[in-house]
Length: 293
Image (cartoon, rainbow, N blue to C red):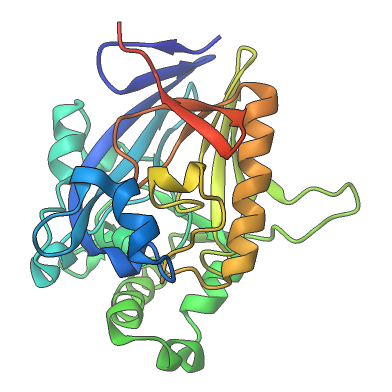
């Protein structure tokens, strides 16, 4: 079984899963919960809504210490935080406090290419993690390197991809994986032993989650399958950044039902508090943060 420690660390077999905070950002409620009427939303938010009508959202990456490699899942906002005015971009500090340097990272896994997940990949026109191969789905790479697609997106989404991905390509450190449905029904790929990238489209065309397994335990890093704790109960609530809202809801429902059935641990990039689990409830799923001992 998984073991919880005093800090946001989870042991899955021989793999140590460590939360590295990049900080947080404030989002207008209409962005996190598009098309939800205030008379329904505000009672649910309670005291979380500030005077500006925004809600704080965590940016939490995960470092996987496996027997064969050190794997970082997502890279935070990086120096884009300065332009956005967000209290984020602190992954480097969190990495140092955990006893690691950027050179120690062997693999960077990207769940998708929104700015708050890729902003920390490049520093001074060079890869921040110089020794790492950067793994993402072929669909996501194709989407965010296609000029015609980027030209149709808001500039705050397109500009980071235009600035970051060519640098990684120049340094020949990108590895794309095909997660299309195979003969055996598989839509996942092993990154290193015990760590798999799984297709979870909806939030973006090539959005993925990361599954970690070992010693009879499993952990699913949900990325942006959901962006707020309220979506555990309100499965049909979507955010303004969801590429295909209906697909996001289907993916979310499937993954949470799977976790409830198997007892898998879960982690979501934008939901602070660390690792947790879900159980089936009358209104969606009940989320319980791991008990700290």
